[in-house]
Length: 429
Image (cartoon, rainbow, N blue to C red; front, side, top):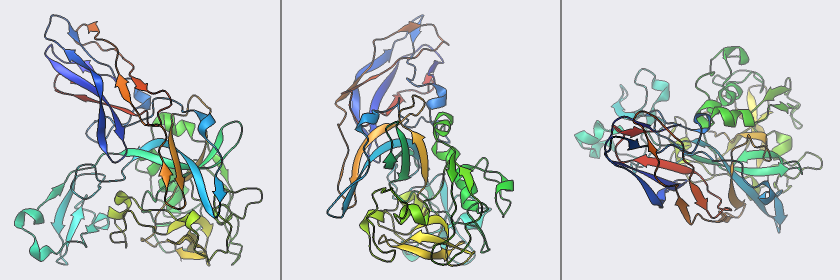
């Protein structure tokens, strides 16, 4: 990703550290001034294009600058029924309100009155299935302006992942810290397995040949929305075992190979011999805070039968079959495991993806994100104290260069850097 000078004129480019959900919180002490001259200055972004993220408007998003310190990462610890997980930042996805309008939308969203008389948030007017009913508004009190309002798209934010397991070589098993999206296990009510369901295709950006509905997710799935090409390549293709349901005997179907997947009953239920993952072993039906996860605003704002659930615990899908072949197992909002599960086409559940990645590899761009505990406490590691840039560099108009910022201290947990130009008509990222 490069800044290219378009014409010789004054412009200021500022490097800043970004915190998830908080916007710019610390600007760099050093700013690069582009002065009017026969030769002009241009500031290059510190990352290569394949390690950059852009939103639909071409704005740069946050990405790690390199591999974090794997020596910080430990296996989950449990004491007095409270589990603690180390976490990492990896990838970017829509999560919370970044523009102050109270919502989190992937794309520009309009308020539209449908034929039923209700007002909806609509991202695609030709597809009512994407409508989001604005339950929390009384339209009778709305002004005409509110009834015709357009919500801007929100920015992606770094995703936090819990480390469920790690070996001495840095091979880690990771699970989303929050319920990051709303996805049906399968888009129709039918007998289905993990191999054939639309959720598997959506998470991994598979084509229509991979699911029973023959729906193509190759260009519009989670994997490509949340990760750069470099990040995708860092995620391992895992051998995913799809065991039968231990309570009902429902067939789990064929084993698969996937980058992203949901946990199984064995993994979430702490049934795997020799594995811990931080889930305290209890009966499936018992309240278990070690399995509780909270919903992002983005997931809550997507179509589905869930209202005002952002920031609260809710239920999430497992990949294992449920009581019948048209059901899938799940984890209740209070952390109890349901082997019977929910109908596969339920639109009220959430997804909590998991994957394997080697944290010691130089090709895995991640940063340490502190710890989270099952009692809702957390730490965020060492905070950033400052960002410095190298001095001005003289180049000719139309050329580009790269400069690398120094984030201090070296063990800072959040080393994501974003850039801002005072005039994008002169210098662009």
